Length: 385
Image (tube, rainbow, N blue to C red; front, side, top):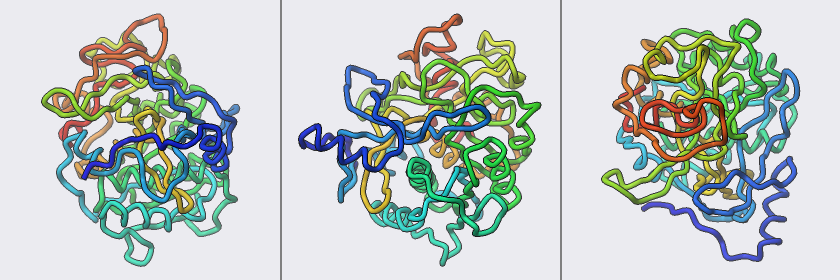
């Protein structure tokens, strides 16, 4: 049965107060679409130099609840035409900063709620390590802990049979997150999901953390509308933009437009993907994004965190969804991030919406073919991955 997005009829002020206790950043209005005016907050503080912020938003007009609201696994798999469950031989890693003490318990509750197979330390499906491969976990940060729960739930929703490896960086510095990235690959992950970013940077500085042939690395494009972020702008990753997803419409049964918060643009610091040639990006360097998935908190997803159900959005949702699709495809060892460009027919092209104003229209406005906010489009099965 489809878990529909709904707003609980509770006094607005009390509702916002209840949700804000769970986050670590000041309240702010999320970029909105289609006239919706739901309230959301970013869960992580703004990135400073050489650090990253997570890209999750939590709805504050949907109180922490005992039952889920927002899209669940059946919704997401229907929207993206995903009919397989993946292989337990495939490990998807999630790299984030700081510790989430309740991550495994919350993951278990999410999977039980939606009828997914158990994924625990005991059965060998789930592992949690620090950036050095051990169990000396960093301190907790509430915003990043919420991000971790979001990421684990989205990988589970899309690839329920995949193993999951959580790697926790000591801090949100690029250096520590990069060390965690390398550790994920060293531990055997063939797909790595990253729902964080900061100011655009050069691969000549940080690229060694992401240059892993035979590993599919997904990175969220950012939540501030038009503007390039790193590591989404890296030559070595799949940059994942965001959409506003609504049930109903057309033969697909779902409608998607650009989420106004999705990051996009043209990096002057990193080289273009060879696959982008011929797609008219208008960018001499690395154009962002490559593909997309749901990200608008107004059409957000159900997430279990610290014993309660919340509704999340942000391109933090989109990156682990695409990581899960790579997991379903089981093809990561033999492809690189140009693969979606040679298989763009296996994507739903998003042709409506914008994330701001920009000097080259396709960097911020949807069109047929490639555009910045949604790249080549959203998954239509696993054929593009």
